[in-house]
Image (cartoon, rainbow, N blue to C red; front, side):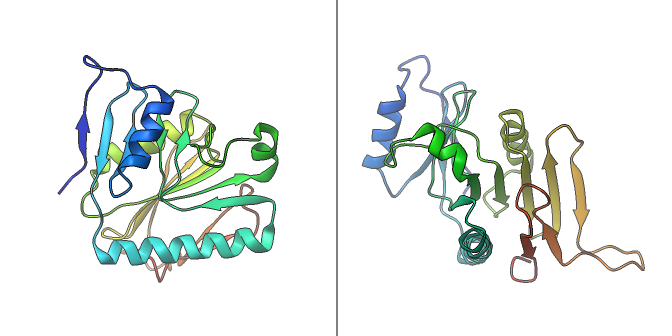
Length: 198
């Protein structure tokens, strides 16, 4: 089963409040909304992806607790991007000072682009669609993003003002392939151990 995109634009334009209520009324359905107002119905993942995403989120939350300069979020969190899209990355992190400056309602989507996002490919995801979502994150101010594909053991790294870097974990060359990813200057000293993700 793949994600389904529904275009209600010719019938109704949902306000932010209506979209939020739609999500709350249907908690068993993961919904996103594009900048054009299209609704994306995300199917549930298999247990393998759920476990990998939990382990990824666990590492991020453990680092965020120790670092205490920001807040980590799981895949159930909605972000209202500057372009109007409502997205829920598989994992995200935002500097505390950015949240404090907004004083947002904790029961609503966070009205900003995270500093850091991760999308973890599952069997139901389309690569081109997910790459476009990663580009959208970067275009809206995300400073660092990882698109992790366990099947191909490949990571695409998205940074502001730079080309996408592709890191392959299974290199045919003699040089050892990386077993970790660095949070760089966005998440100082955060290192994602990939063995539990791949």
